[in-house]
Image 1 (cartoon, rainbow, N blue to C red):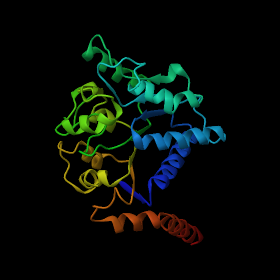
Image 2: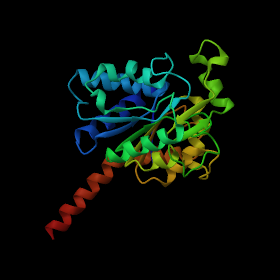
Image 3: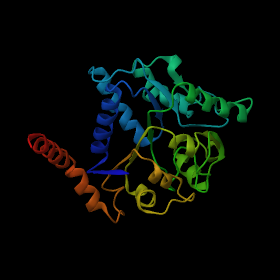
Image 4: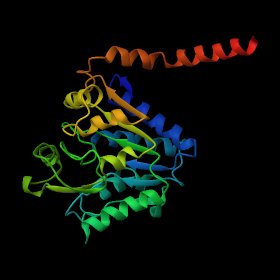
Length: 271
């Protein structure tokens, strides 16, 4: 797990945007897994600005959204489909037929979830999965105690998640209690994962994810087993990490390692 600590949310966004641009420029990265939430909004704003400057192209991008509230129609102001249209898709040149969402009103939940998995496989799998993290360590809507082997499924939301989402709805009783989400194993199948965390409220979750034991009580901790994860957090979200100095040192000296390796190769070639 590559842990990158930046000064603030703006620096986190800049780093993440640069990584996404690089991956899309490589062409072999085509399928994105996309989240919603406050932290991704800043990333999407940065990507829109990059698109307008001609730095990134979404014409060949295929997207799969992480989750959706059960019971909300696509046009509902708080549906995640509406969120993505307003915060990214309507501002870039992604093709509508390449955009995939879970439905908040499926006729058959089990069939719909299995079909979503099939669509991901048919697209070639997710190349880069972007994630946020909940205060309780959830990723997607995989809440604490969720199976670490789960596939796309329906889930009940915890009291913590419902309270966190309360600010988006006019009345407390309007906050959805259930959702559909990519499963933990679905997320883990991604070729690369980029997780963003900002703010002091995420410090406990970041600590548990990066340095705690792998356990279902913190679903994000399973990312310790993924071979290509970058966690980008600001100083506030990194505040409780025990080994933050090591993470900073490795990040600051990455270029030195590459320079050292290049020098060693030149030395060996000269012998």
